[in-house]
Amino acid sequence: MIRNLPTSHCPGCGADLACVDGPTHPYMVASPACYERFTRILAAEYGSAALRRTHRLTVDTYAVQHPGDGTDRRQIQSVGLHLARLCVQLASPMPPRETNDVMLGFSRHKATLEKLEPPRRFAVTAADVAPHAGRSDHCERVTAWAAATWNDWVEHHDYIRDWITYAKGK
Image (tube, rainbow, N blue to C red):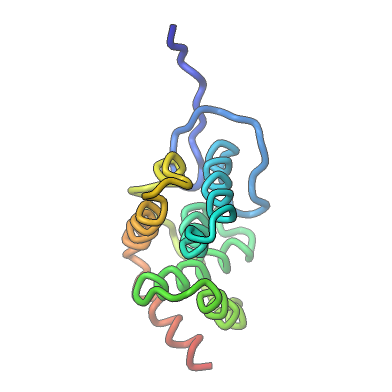
């Protein structure tokens, strides 16, 4: 007999998932079920050297899909910084250490970031990627998730690109 399990709607990315109890992030607003999918992807990446190259894409993508309402300055800065690094990584992929250096450079200017209105919906979410965590198509799925999410934020591409130019010039 198939039971209809109660579902929860993630307030960040909009995914509808079976309800679970569990932790969430302090300021990235997500349902426990969605956060569990994210941590499943992270566990696979931490457990395999071959998957670590997509780790920053995973973090950036999840962060910009769970922006909160912008009442917490950390939310505004998180969205801006992660969108900026996502833009840079998708335009010219680089090793994890270099992508981390990019973020450290950007973070010196995070106070200048403005609140961005998130997209109404996201084409791909952690719920779509988690079933592939650790599998042979893990990196391909994460990269597609990142690219789809960057495209979902199209309304703010010019702002982010201008901010990157500003942050690199300082």
